[in-house]
Figure (cartoon, rainbow, N blue to C red):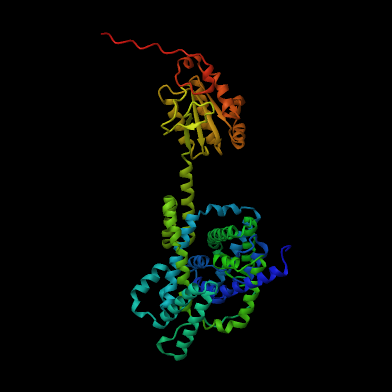
Length: 582
């Protein structure tokens, strides 16, 4: 509030007006996609938008109905009730309350970091899959086939394939005009509200066709019941509560993942620091209030947040202005909303679906990280074939499994030197053709990565392999500043290695272990077994101390002599080779 001034109020008011104009067609379209009457999409852009802005962390995120959440809600609830029916509406409002309660609980318990486990690859696959599903459901309205095509994507495609000859030419014309007008405005006047203009063109054509009558008549949205979101406590069968809670949890993860991703994206553009827990609190309170005022699940909307930033919004009051101005527009223009054609909304949703595919990101991901690309592809396929909440959880599990696999084999690199210069630095020996011979008594090993239960076996096998080599060094210095974390299984690995080294007449040493690692060793008693004098702050002091423990007889015959201390060690040259007999 300290940043509010007459200048920011003017900027926020102009940005809020743009947000209200943008959400008018989007709210109607997304509510239709969610299987709800159109006014519910507009309700979701009023109180939830203002509450999330006032209680959240982001200055620019605009909360309201979104395509992915609308489609997810439709996919979850359509098996439980007929879309658009009174029971379906009650379930949608109850789901909104449950999502708000879960989001608020996550914020209060400060568990906002759980959204970080939804990888960008899983979100990309889920978003693209949702885009394909949106396109399938938009086609039936754009072709004038309505609800007869069913609710499941496969059923819709099968119906469209069987009844292709029944395409309604009037609806197809209206949808095509909406798409063409929107694309033209985006190209010629990028700052104009393209979707609103495209929908206005489609509405004018639909009004003309309906005025003439005949077979070209198209179906419209119909009159809104109320401009102000009415207070209503959802009335559902309590026996459905366990199933609704499970669905709400999955939808909560999707909503929070989408909201925090958008908030981070916009914050990166504006230079703002975010508080994830406070952002989740704002989203949770928005859905709690929205569920009691006839709103379905709302979350951060990229289609409105980015224009909000680019329009010059300075504070969260821009979203408050957007909600108030939208309420005013509905009070004035509610009779006009009744004439919006469903085919025009279908055209808008087709454009939204195309933008969600984001082919450029797919190409970049395929060229940079094939594993992430396959995770995104698997999530995409799952989104098309199974329930949406299962698809996003499947993608998240794949990402976690991929991470565990990558970290289960931490790098363990042999260190040494590649020059005998006085200021020589340590270098990786593995695969280095310029590397000097290693010390025959002391192995230098750099540990890169965490030694936890998933990586313990790999680390243990590698250490055993180093000991099992012929004439393997009996002493081991582990450069452990890159060993970020160990657990009980990791501590047991080093205990086993210590016993094996000492049984063979050698020893184990560490260079610069991290404080968290030392603390774990202290809790497990490993420090007492190892000895604190076996932990060194730098490599020079470590090698100087360990050198005193090496066998001088081996040093005397050694030709590697790579350490600084080797210069003072006695050296016994090898006897000259005998000349062969004549």
